Length: 254
Image 1: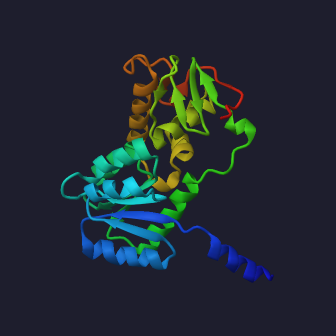
Image 2: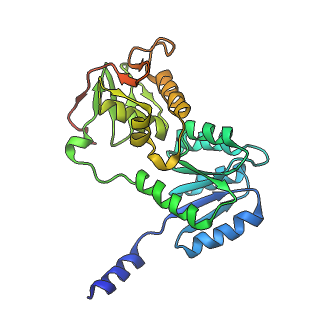
């Protein structure tokens, strides 16, 4: 088989990316769904958060495109649900006047945002960029190994955090990535720009305050007193530091 035919066969058998598009404006939602379908995506549509939640009970997409301003439950509330319980990548579709909402959405775990009106080609580029970050390559046995710090354990393969009493502590996708960044660099000062690169990628255009809020959310999960943090310390003028020794354990096998 020629290389061209082999590539065509591989493309034909590749599993298409499934998207859930949640937007209450049919004049935007339906043409956008048609465009994304022509780009090779499989697109499901929901006109509000309630229908999106119903759709998610029967099918799990690879990524959610989510409008912020919707009647009933708004996009921020649904975004929080998706990032904390589904671990799904989310791209927010926002109006130009919603800068504060964009920041809040990124703080609660959204992966990126696109400002309306936008070029559909830009959205496709953002989708592919987010999916590249979300698609984790196969881990080596060393990378599979759970982290242990101050009697806490994080299993990177299962993305499961357990406290010193063995109780599982839920983490959003953003909190997981932030914690891994600290665990891979214990006792090192990580400034905000470096954390942005490691946790979100520069494509997300996050602001410093978004990093601070994500750190605050993680502290509420792992600190005895988040107002007096002992594990994730603030280094004034520098950033943050994980003040704990970290070791890797033997990978757990089911």
